[in-house]
Image (cartoon, rainbow over all chains, first blue to last red; front, side, top):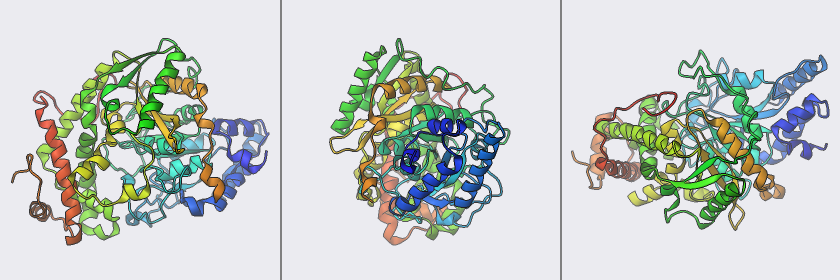
Length: 476
Length: 66
Protein backbone atom coordinates (compact mmCIF):
# COMPACT_ATOMS: atom_id res chain seq x y z
CA UNK A 1 0.00 0.00 0.00
CA UNK A 2 1.19 3.50 -0.75
CA UNK A 3 0.68 6.31 1.77
CA UNK A 4 -2.52 7.57 0.13
CA UNK A 5 -4.05 4.10 0.14
CA UNK A 6 -3.12 3.77 3.82
CA UNK A 7 -4.71 7.11 4.70
CA UNK A 8 -7.92 6.22 2.90
CA UNK A 9 -8.45 3.04 4.93
CA UNK A 10 -11.19 3.01 7.53
CA UNK A 11 -10.20 2.56 11.18
CA UNK A 12 -11.26 -1.08 11.25
CA UNK A 13 -9.44 -1.78 7.98
CA UNK A 14 -6.34 -0.13 9.43
CA UNK A 15 -6.50 -2.17 12.64
CA UNK A 16 -7.00 -5.36 10.67
CA UNK A 17 -4.05 -4.62 8.36
CA UNK A 18 -1.85 -3.85 11.36
CA UNK A 19 -2.86 -6.96 13.28
CA UNK A 20 -2.16 -9.15 10.25
CA UNK A 21 1.17 -7.34 9.72
CA UNK A 22 0.19 -6.16 6.24
CA UNK A 23 0.81 -2.66 7.55
CA UNK A 24 3.17 -1.44 10.25
CA UNK A 25 1.82 1.01 12.84
CA UNK A 26 4.70 3.35 12.07
CA UNK A 27 3.88 3.41 8.36
CA UNK A 28 0.25 4.15 9.23
CA UNK A 29 1.27 7.11 11.39
CA UNK A 30 3.79 8.34 8.80
CA UNK A 31 1.12 8.25 6.09
CA UNK A 32 -1.11 10.59 8.08
CA UNK A 33 1.72 12.84 9.24
CA UNK A 34 2.76 13.30 5.62
CA UNK A 35 -0.79 14.32 4.67
CA UNK A 36 -1.04 16.66 7.64
CA UNK A 37 2.24 18.31 6.63
CA UNK A 38 1.06 18.66 3.05
CA UNK A 39 -2.57 19.69 3.53
CA UNK A 40 -3.30 21.08 6.95
CA UNK A 41 -1.82 24.54 6.52
CA UNK A 42 -4.79 25.10 4.18
CA UNK A 43 -7.41 23.07 6.06
CA UNK A 44 -6.65 24.13 9.66
CA UNK A 45 -7.98 20.89 11.11
CA UNK A 46 -5.27 20.52 13.74
CA UNK A 47 -4.25 22.77 16.61
CA UNK A 48 -1.49 20.47 17.86
CA UNK A 49 0.26 17.56 16.16
CA UNK A 50 2.14 15.24 18.52
CA UNK A 51 4.50 13.79 15.95
CA UNK A 52 7.12 12.21 18.20
CA UNK A 53 4.60 10.87 20.68
CA UNK A 54 2.60 9.30 17.85
CA UNK A 55 5.65 7.60 16.38
CA UNK A 56 6.67 6.37 19.83
CA UNK A 57 3.19 4.96 20.48
CA UNK A 58 3.20 3.29 17.05
CA UNK A 59 6.48 1.57 17.86
CA UNK A 60 5.03 0.29 21.13
CA UNK A 61 2.04 -1.17 19.28
CA UNK A 62 4.41 -2.86 16.83
CA UNK A 63 6.38 -4.32 19.72
CA UNK A 64 3.22 -5.71 21.30
CA UNK A 65 2.14 -7.33 18.05
CA UNK A 66 5.65 -8.70 17.66
CA UNK A 67 5.29 -10.36 21.07
CA UNK A 68 2.04 -11.94 19.95
CA UNK A 69 -0.18 -9.67 22.06
CA UNK A 70 -3.45 -8.13 20.89
CA UNK A 71 -3.18 -4.35 21.38
CA UNK A 72 -6.95 -3.95 21.18
CA UNK A 73 -9.71 -3.21 18.68
CA UNK A 74 -8.01 0.00 17.54
CA UNK A 75 -4.56 -1.53 17.22
CA UNK A 76 -2.27 1.10 15.76
CA UNK A 77 -5.15 3.20 14.41
CA UNK A 78 -4.06 6.84 14.07
CA UNK A 79 -6.74 9.01 15.62
CA UNK A 80 -7.16 12.67 16.49
CA UNK A 81 -9.41 14.30 19.06
CA UNK A 82 -11.22 17.57 19.49
CA UNK A 83 -9.09 19.93 21.59
CA UNK A 84 -11.75 19.85 24.27
CA UNK A 85 -10.57 16.53 25.73
CA UNK A 86 -7.88 16.71 28.34
CA UNK A 87 -4.67 15.03 27.23
CA UNK A 88 -1.89 14.51 29.75
CA UNK A 89 1.06 16.86 29.09
CA UNK A 90 -0.48 18.01 25.80
CA UNK A 91 -1.88 21.49 25.25
CA UNK A 92 -5.70 21.53 25.49
CA UNK A 93 -7.05 24.88 24.32
CA UNK A 94 -10.79 24.32 23.91
CA UNK A 95 -10.30 26.60 20.92
CA UNK A 96 -9.97 29.68 23.10
CA UNK A 97 -7.24 32.11 24.05
CA UNK A 98 -8.57 31.73 27.58
CA UNK A 99 -7.03 28.24 27.66
CA UNK A 100 -4.11 28.82 25.33
CA UNK A 101 -1.61 27.66 27.98
CA UNK A 102 -3.67 24.89 29.60
CA UNK A 103 -1.77 21.60 29.77
CA UNK A 104 -3.74 18.95 31.72
CA UNK A 105 -2.02 16.69 34.20
CA UNK A 106 -4.19 13.72 33.25
CA UNK A 107 -6.10 12.24 30.35
CA UNK A 108 -9.85 12.41 30.04
CA UNK A 109 -11.48 9.00 30.42
CA UNK A 110 -12.31 8.91 26.70
CA UNK A 111 -8.67 9.50 25.77
CA UNK A 112 -7.47 6.90 28.25
CA UNK A 113 -9.85 4.29 26.86
CA UNK A 114 -8.86 5.07 23.29
CA UNK A 115 -5.19 4.63 24.24
CA UNK A 116 -5.98 1.38 26.07
CA UNK A 117 -7.67 0.10 22.89
CA UNK A 118 -4.41 0.44 21.00
CA UNK A 119 -5.05 3.66 19.09
CA UNK A 120 -2.29 6.16 18.38
CA UNK A 121 -2.98 9.83 19.04
CA UNK A 122 -1.86 12.06 16.17
CA UNK A 123 -2.95 15.34 17.71
CA UNK A 124 -5.63 17.74 18.87
CA UNK A 125 -8.26 19.11 16.51
CA UNK A 126 -9.55 22.60 15.93
CA UNK A 127 -12.98 23.62 17.17
CA UNK A 128 -15.25 26.58 17.63
CA UNK A 129 -14.32 28.52 20.73
CA UNK A 130 -15.32 26.76 23.96
CA UNK A 131 -17.27 24.22 21.89
CA UNK A 132 -19.86 26.84 21.03
CA UNK A 133 -20.48 28.07 17.51
CA UNK A 134 -20.11 31.03 15.20
CA UNK A 135 -16.52 31.85 16.15
CA UNK A 136 -15.45 34.65 13.80
CA UNK A 137 -11.70 34.52 14.23
CA UNK A 138 -10.59 31.15 15.63
CA UNK A 139 -7.15 31.64 17.23
CA UNK A 140 -5.75 28.58 15.46
CA UNK A 141 -7.19 29.31 12.01
CA UNK A 142 -10.52 28.89 10.27
CA UNK A 143 -11.15 25.20 9.45
CA UNK A 144 -12.40 24.81 5.89
CA UNK A 145 -14.74 22.22 4.43
CA UNK A 146 -12.80 19.81 2.18
CA UNK A 147 -15.83 19.59 -0.12
CA UNK A 148 -15.79 23.35 -0.74
CA UNK A 149 -13.23 25.63 0.83
CA UNK A 150 -15.67 28.54 0.92
CA UNK A 151 -17.99 26.56 3.18
CA UNK A 152 -18.00 25.83 6.87
CA UNK A 153 -17.23 22.29 8.00
CA UNK A 154 -19.83 22.74 10.73
CA UNK A 155 -19.56 23.54 14.40
CA UNK A 156 -18.24 23.02 16.93
CA UNK A 157 -16.25 19.84 16.18
CA UNK A 158 -15.07 21.44 12.96
CA UNK A 159 -11.57 19.99 12.92
CA UNK A 160 -12.92 16.52 13.70
CA UNK A 161 -15.03 16.62 10.54
CA UNK A 162 -12.34 18.17 8.35
CA UNK A 163 -9.65 15.72 9.44
CA UNK A 164 -11.86 12.77 8.48
CA UNK A 165 -13.07 14.16 5.16
CA UNK A 166 -9.48 15.00 4.16
CA UNK A 167 -8.14 11.71 5.55
CA UNK A 168 -5.86 13.39 8.05
CA UNK A 169 -6.71 10.69 10.63
CA UNK A 170 -8.41 7.32 10.56
CA UNK A 171 -11.00 8.25 13.17
CA UNK A 172 -11.68 11.23 15.38
CA UNK A 173 -13.48 12.24 18.52
CA UNK A 174 -15.82 15.18 18.48
CA UNK A 175 -18.10 16.40 21.21
CA UNK A 176 -21.81 16.95 20.79
CA UNK A 177 -23.76 19.36 22.99
CA UNK A 178 -26.50 20.43 20.60
CA UNK A 179 -25.25 18.83 17.41
CA UNK A 180 -21.59 19.75 17.53
CA UNK A 181 -20.57 16.29 16.42
CA UNK A 182 -23.44 15.38 14.13
CA UNK A 183 -23.41 18.79 12.39
CA UNK A 184 -19.80 18.63 11.20
CA UNK A 185 -20.32 14.97 10.29
CA UNK A 186 -23.23 16.04 8.10
CA UNK A 187 -21.43 18.95 6.42
CA UNK A 188 -18.24 16.94 5.88
CA UNK A 189 -19.88 13.73 4.63
CA UNK A 190 -18.78 11.44 7.47
CA UNK A 191 -20.37 9.56 10.38
CA UNK A 192 -21.01 11.20 13.75
CA UNK A 193 -22.76 9.73 16.78
CA UNK A 194 -24.29 11.33 19.83
CA UNK A 195 -24.69 8.44 22.30
CA UNK A 196 -27.29 8.19 25.05
CA UNK A 197 -26.35 10.90 27.58
CA UNK A 198 -25.01 8.62 30.32
CA UNK A 199 -23.41 6.08 28.01
CA UNK A 200 -19.92 7.65 27.83
CA UNK A 201 -17.88 9.33 30.56
CA UNK A 202 -17.41 13.06 30.36
CA UNK A 203 -14.58 13.18 32.86
CA UNK A 204 -11.82 15.41 31.53
CA UNK A 205 -13.92 17.20 28.95
CA UNK A 206 -14.15 20.99 29.06
CA UNK A 207 -17.87 21.64 29.34
CA UNK A 208 -20.10 23.76 27.16
CA UNK A 209 -23.32 22.75 28.96
CA UNK A 210 -23.10 20.13 31.68
CA UNK A 211 -26.70 18.94 31.07
CA UNK A 212 -26.10 18.03 27.46
CA UNK A 213 -22.41 17.60 26.60
CA UNK A 214 -21.69 14.17 25.12
CA UNK A 215 -18.62 12.46 23.69
CA UNK A 216 -19.11 11.99 19.95
CA UNK A 217 -17.21 9.39 17.93
CA UNK A 218 -16.71 10.58 14.35
CA UNK A 219 -15.61 8.13 11.70
CA UNK A 220 -15.38 7.28 8.02
CA UNK A 221 -17.79 4.34 8.31
CA UNK A 222 -20.64 3.10 10.47
CA UNK A 223 -18.63 0.05 11.51
CA UNK A 224 -15.80 2.29 12.75
CA UNK A 225 -18.31 4.25 14.79
CA UNK A 226 -19.70 1.08 16.39
CA UNK A 227 -16.18 -0.02 17.31
CA UNK A 228 -15.26 3.41 18.71
CA UNK A 229 -18.39 3.53 20.87
CA UNK A 230 -17.65 0.07 22.21
CA UNK A 231 -14.21 1.28 23.25
CA UNK A 232 -15.25 4.47 25.05
CA UNK A 233 -18.65 3.48 26.53
CA UNK A 234 -19.30 2.24 30.04
CA UNK A 235 -19.31 3.23 33.67
CA UNK A 236 -16.52 5.46 34.94
CA UNK A 237 -16.01 6.13 38.62
CA UNK A 238 -14.70 9.58 37.72
CA UNK A 239 -18.09 10.41 36.20
CA UNK A 240 -20.72 9.00 38.60
CA UNK A 241 -23.52 9.81 36.17
CA UNK A 242 -22.33 7.23 33.67
CA UNK A 243 -24.60 4.21 33.37
CA UNK A 244 -23.76 0.83 34.87
CA UNK A 245 -25.50 -0.89 31.97
CA UNK A 246 -23.22 -3.41 30.25
CA UNK A 247 -21.64 -2.31 26.99
CA UNK A 248 -22.63 -4.64 24.14
CA UNK A 249 -20.54 -5.48 21.11
CA UNK A 250 -22.07 -2.82 18.90
CA UNK A 251 -20.98 -4.62 15.73
CA UNK A 252 -22.65 -7.90 16.71
CA UNK A 253 -26.09 -7.11 15.26
CA UNK A 254 -24.95 -4.44 12.84
CA UNK A 255 -25.39 -6.68 9.82
CA UNK A 256 -28.87 -7.94 10.76
CA UNK A 257 -30.58 -5.65 8.25
CA UNK A 258 -33.71 -3.58 8.70
CA UNK A 259 -36.39 -6.00 7.62
CA UNK A 260 -39.34 -5.41 9.94
CA UNK A 261 -37.81 -2.32 11.48
CA UNK A 262 -40.14 0.67 11.78
CA UNK A 263 -38.78 4.06 10.71
CA UNK A 264 -40.64 7.29 11.48
CA UNK A 265 -40.10 10.51 9.56
CA UNK A 266 -40.49 13.43 11.96
CA UNK A 267 -43.29 15.39 10.33
CA UNK A 268 -42.61 18.78 11.90
CA UNK A 269 -38.96 18.77 10.86
CA UNK A 270 -39.76 17.78 7.29
CA UNK A 271 -42.69 19.95 6.32
CA UNK A 272 -40.93 23.27 6.89
CA UNK A 273 -40.62 25.43 3.79
CA UNK A 274 -37.16 26.57 4.81
CA UNK A 275 -35.55 23.21 4.11
CA UNK A 276 -33.17 23.10 1.15
CA UNK A 277 -34.90 21.19 -1.70
CA UNK A 278 -31.94 18.88 -2.24
CA UNK A 279 -31.98 17.96 1.45
CA UNK A 280 -35.71 17.24 1.32
CA UNK A 281 -35.23 15.10 -1.76
CA UNK A 282 -32.35 13.18 -0.16
CA UNK A 283 -34.37 12.39 2.93
CA UNK A 284 -37.31 11.18 0.88
CA UNK A 285 -34.95 9.00 -1.16
CA UNK A 286 -33.54 7.56 2.05
CA UNK A 287 -37.05 6.52 3.06
CA UNK A 288 -37.41 4.72 -0.27
CA UNK A 289 -34.14 2.93 0.43
CA UNK A 290 -35.33 1.83 3.85
CA UNK A 291 -38.57 0.56 2.31
CA UNK A 292 -36.64 -1.37 -0.32
CA UNK A 293 -34.53 -2.90 2.44
CA UNK A 294 -37.66 -4.16 4.17
CA UNK A 295 -38.33 -1.50 6.77
CA UNK A 296 -41.77 -0.11 7.42
CA UNK A 297 -41.80 3.67 6.97
CA UNK A 298 -44.36 6.03 8.45
CA UNK A 299 -44.72 9.59 9.65
CA UNK A 300 -44.60 10.54 13.32
CA UNK A 301 -45.44 13.77 15.06
CA UNK A 302 -43.29 15.47 17.70
CA UNK A 303 -44.98 18.88 17.99
CA UNK A 304 -42.37 20.48 20.23
CA UNK A 305 -39.53 19.62 17.86
CA UNK A 306 -40.14 22.89 16.02
CA UNK A 307 -39.21 24.81 19.14
CA UNK A 308 -36.31 22.61 20.13
CA UNK A 309 -33.76 25.14 18.88
CA UNK A 310 -35.06 27.81 21.22
CA UNK A 311 -35.42 25.39 24.14
CA UNK A 312 -31.88 24.22 23.56
CA UNK A 313 -30.41 27.71 23.49
CA UNK A 314 -32.52 28.72 26.48
CA UNK A 315 -30.91 25.96 28.53
CA UNK A 316 -27.48 25.38 27.02
CA UNK A 317 -26.44 28.98 26.52
CA UNK A 318 -27.79 30.09 29.87
CA UNK A 319 -26.06 27.22 31.61
CA UNK A 320 -22.89 27.90 29.62
CA UNK A 321 -22.94 31.59 30.51
CA UNK A 322 -23.38 30.76 34.18
CA UNK A 323 -20.48 28.33 34.10
CA UNK A 324 -18.29 30.96 32.42
CA UNK A 325 -19.29 33.86 34.60
CA UNK A 326 -15.73 34.40 35.76
CA UNK A 327 -14.44 34.57 32.19
CA UNK A 328 -17.25 36.94 31.20
CA UNK A 329 -16.39 39.28 34.06
CA UNK A 330 -12.61 39.06 34.06
CA UNK A 331 -11.46 38.05 30.58
CA UNK A 332 -14.13 39.13 28.10
CA UNK A 333 -11.45 40.53 25.81
CA UNK A 334 -9.91 37.07 25.43
CA UNK A 335 -13.12 35.74 23.89
CA UNK A 336 -14.00 35.90 20.23
CA UNK A 337 -16.58 38.57 19.51
CA UNK A 338 -19.29 36.01 18.65
CA UNK A 339 -18.67 33.91 21.77
CA UNK A 340 -18.64 36.99 23.93
CA UNK A 341 -21.93 38.42 22.68
CA UNK A 342 -23.60 34.99 22.74
CA UNK A 343 -22.61 34.39 26.35
CA UNK A 344 -23.41 37.95 27.39
CA UNK A 345 -26.93 37.72 26.00
CA UNK A 346 -27.47 34.32 27.64
CA UNK A 347 -26.24 35.66 30.98
CA UNK A 348 -29.19 38.05 31.04
CA UNK A 349 -31.92 35.42 30.69
CA UNK A 350 -34.43 35.63 33.58
CA UNK A 351 -34.83 32.59 35.83
CA UNK A 352 -38.48 32.11 34.85
CA UNK A 353 -37.53 31.84 31.18
CA UNK A 354 -34.83 29.28 31.97
CA UNK A 355 -37.29 27.35 34.11
CA UNK A 356 -39.82 27.30 31.29
CA UNK A 357 -37.21 25.90 28.92
CA UNK A 358 -36.21 23.26 31.46
CA UNK A 359 -39.85 22.15 31.77
CA UNK A 360 -40.38 22.19 28.01
CA UNK A 361 -37.38 19.90 27.72
CA UNK A 362 -39.19 17.30 29.83
CA UNK A 363 -42.32 17.63 27.72
CA UNK A 364 -40.25 17.18 24.57
CA UNK A 365 -38.75 14.01 26.06
CA UNK A 366 -42.26 12.67 26.67
CA UNK A 367 -43.21 13.39 23.07
CA UNK A 368 -40.07 11.68 21.79
CA UNK A 369 -40.58 8.59 23.94
CA UNK A 370 -44.22 8.44 22.82
CA UNK A 371 -43.18 8.58 19.17
CA UNK A 372 -40.58 5.88 19.78
CA UNK A 373 -43.25 3.61 21.21
CA UNK A 374 -44.57 3.44 17.66
CA UNK A 375 -41.32 3.22 15.66
CA UNK A 376 -37.78 1.93 16.19
CA UNK A 377 -35.92 4.82 14.62
CA UNK A 378 -36.70 8.46 13.93
CA UNK A 379 -35.63 10.00 10.62
CA UNK A 380 -34.80 13.57 9.65
CA UNK A 381 -31.98 15.46 8.03
CA UNK A 382 -29.15 16.33 10.40
CA UNK A 383 -29.38 19.87 9.12
CA UNK A 384 -32.12 21.45 6.99
CA UNK A 385 -29.50 22.77 4.62
CA UNK A 386 -25.99 21.84 3.49
CA UNK A 387 -22.81 23.51 4.72
CA UNK A 388 -23.25 27.28 4.64
CA UNK A 389 -20.57 29.71 3.54
CA UNK A 390 -18.17 30.75 6.28
CA UNK A 391 -19.30 34.31 5.86
CA UNK A 392 -22.96 33.38 6.33
CA UNK A 393 -22.23 31.55 9.55
CA UNK A 394 -20.05 34.14 11.20
CA UNK A 395 -21.73 37.36 10.06
CA UNK A 396 -23.10 39.57 12.79
CA UNK A 397 -26.82 39.24 13.36
CA UNK A 398 -28.72 42.03 11.64
CA UNK A 399 -31.97 41.75 13.56
CA UNK A 400 -34.16 39.44 15.60
CA UNK A 401 -35.52 37.51 12.60
CA UNK A 402 -31.96 37.00 11.39
CA UNK A 403 -31.11 35.39 14.74
CA UNK A 404 -34.15 33.15 14.47
CA UNK A 405 -33.30 31.98 10.98
CA UNK A 406 -29.59 31.49 11.37
CA UNK A 407 -29.32 30.52 15.03
CA UNK A 408 -32.44 28.72 16.24
CA UNK A 409 -33.87 26.99 13.17
CA UNK A 410 -31.11 24.50 12.37
CA UNK A 411 -30.52 23.70 16.03
CA UNK A 412 -33.97 22.10 16.28
CA UNK A 413 -32.86 19.15 14.13
CA UNK A 414 -30.03 18.01 16.33
CA UNK A 415 -31.23 19.70 19.52
CA UNK A 416 -34.19 17.35 19.97
CA UNK A 417 -31.84 14.50 20.86
CA UNK A 418 -29.49 16.61 22.97
CA UNK A 419 -32.37 17.93 25.02
CA UNK A 420 -33.87 14.51 25.58
CA UNK A 421 -30.67 12.53 26.26
CA UNK A 422 -31.42 10.15 23.38
CA UNK A 423 -28.91 8.73 20.89
CA UNK A 424 -28.72 9.90 17.29
CA UNK A 425 -26.36 9.36 14.41
CA UNK A 426 -25.57 11.35 11.29
CA UNK A 427 -24.49 9.34 8.26
CA UNK A 428 -23.80 10.37 4.65
CA UNK A 429 -27.22 10.65 3.02
CA UNK A 430 -26.56 12.19 -0.37
CA UNK A 431 -25.22 15.29 -2.06
CA UNK A 432 -26.63 18.56 -3.26
CA UNK A 433 -26.56 19.37 -6.96
CA UNK A 434 -23.42 21.41 -6.34
CA UNK A 435 -21.63 18.61 -4.55
CA UNK A 436 -22.07 19.33 -0.86
CA UNK A 437 -22.72 16.41 1.51
CA UNK A 438 -26.16 15.90 3.07
CA UNK A 439 -26.44 14.24 6.46
CA UNK A 440 -29.16 11.70 7.23
CA UNK A 441 -29.97 11.65 10.94
CA UNK A 442 -31.41 8.61 12.67
CA UNK A 443 -32.49 8.66 16.31
CA UNK A 444 -33.59 5.96 18.73
CA UNK A 445 -34.70 5.28 22.29
CA UNK A 446 -32.49 5.24 25.39
CA UNK A 447 -29.45 2.95 24.93
CA UNK A 448 -30.71 1.77 21.53
CA UNK A 449 -27.41 2.47 19.79
CA UNK A 450 -27.40 -1.09 18.45
CA UNK A 451 -30.57 -0.31 16.53
CA UNK A 452 -29.01 2.87 15.17
CA UNK A 453 -25.95 1.00 13.94
CA UNK A 454 -28.12 -1.71 12.41
CA UNK A 455 -30.17 0.81 10.43
CA UNK A 456 -27.18 2.99 9.56
CA UNK A 457 -25.08 0.10 8.36
CA UNK A 458 -27.89 -1.25 6.18
CA UNK A 459 -28.36 2.18 4.60
CA UNK A 460 -24.63 2.75 4.18
CA UNK A 461 -24.16 -0.60 2.44
CA UNK A 462 -27.10 0.11 0.13
CA UNK A 463 -25.69 3.47 -0.98
CA UNK A 464 -22.38 4.85 -2.20
CA UNK A 465 -22.31 8.26 -0.53
CA UNK A 466 -19.59 7.26 1.95
CA UNK A 467 -17.25 6.19 -0.85
CA UNK A 468 -16.98 9.64 -2.42
CA UNK A 469 -13.87 11.73 -1.86
CA UNK A 470 -13.81 15.42 -1.17
CA UNK A 471 -12.57 17.03 -4.40
CA UNK A 472 -11.02 20.19 -2.98
CA UNK A 473 -8.18 18.36 -1.24
CA UNK A 474 -6.78 17.36 -4.60
CA UNK A 475 -6.33 21.02 -5.48
CA UNK A 476 -4.06 21.96 -2.60
CA UNK B 1 -39.46 45.22 33.47
CA UNK B 2 -41.41 43.58 30.62
CA UNK B 3 -40.16 41.39 27.82
CA UNK B 4 -43.34 39.69 26.62
CA UNK B 5 -43.93 40.11 22.92
CA UNK B 6 -42.14 43.39 22.66
CA UNK B 7 -38.69 43.79 21.25
CA UNK B 8 -36.24 44.27 24.07
CA UNK B 9 -34.45 47.58 23.63
CA UNK B 10 -30.82 48.45 24.15
CA UNK B 11 -31.54 50.39 27.31
CA UNK B 12 -33.11 47.33 28.92
CA UNK B 13 -30.16 45.18 27.93
CA UNK B 14 -27.73 47.75 29.31
CA UNK B 15 -29.65 47.90 32.58
CA UNK B 16 -29.74 44.11 32.90
CA UNK B 17 -26.06 43.83 32.11
CA UNK B 18 -25.21 46.42 34.73
CA UNK B 19 -27.24 44.52 37.34
CA UNK B 20 -25.54 41.28 36.33
CA UNK B 21 -22.11 42.87 36.55
CA UNK B 22 -21.35 42.32 32.88
CA UNK B 23 -19.73 44.96 30.75
CA UNK B 24 -21.03 45.22 27.19
CA UNK B 25 -19.14 47.52 24.85
CA UNK B 26 -21.09 50.13 22.93
CA UNK B 27 -20.21 48.61 19.57
CA UNK B 28 -21.51 45.18 20.61
CA UNK B 29 -24.70 46.34 22.29
CA UNK B 30 -26.76 45.96 19.10
CA UNK B 31 -25.58 42.38 18.65
CA UNK B 32 -26.27 41.41 22.26
CA UNK B 33 -29.68 43.09 22.10
CA UNK B 34 -30.60 41.20 18.92
CA UNK B 35 -29.52 37.89 20.40
CA UNK B 36 -31.25 38.48 23.72
CA UNK B 37 -34.42 39.84 22.19
CA UNK B 38 -34.67 36.92 19.80
CA UNK B 39 -34.16 34.40 22.59
CA UNK B 40 -36.83 36.01 24.73
CA UNK B 41 -39.26 36.09 21.82
CA UNK B 42 -38.60 32.45 20.95
CA UNK B 43 -39.03 31.41 24.54
CA UNK B 44 -42.24 33.40 24.67
CA UNK B 45 -43.67 30.84 22.25
CA UNK B 46 -43.50 28.29 25.05
CA UNK B 47 -45.98 30.23 27.16
CA UNK B 48 -48.94 28.45 25.62
CA UNK B 49 -47.69 25.03 26.72
CA UNK B 50 -49.25 23.42 29.76
CA UNK B 51 -46.16 22.99 31.90
CA UNK B 52 -47.89 23.27 35.26
CA UNK B 53 -47.35 19.66 36.35
CA UNK B 54 -43.95 19.19 34.82
CA UNK B 55 -40.80 19.36 36.90
CA UNK B 56 -37.39 20.04 35.42
CA UNK B 57 -34.82 17.26 35.69
CA UNK B 58 -31.06 17.31 35.31
CA UNK B 59 -30.67 13.66 34.32
CA UNK B 60 -33.47 11.61 32.80
CA UNK B 61 -34.23 8.09 34.06
CA UNK B 62 -32.29 5.47 32.12
CA UNK B 63 -35.35 4.06 30.40
CA UNK B 64 -38.58 5.83 29.58
CA UNK B 65 -39.84 9.28 30.27
CA UNK B 66 -39.33 11.61 33.21
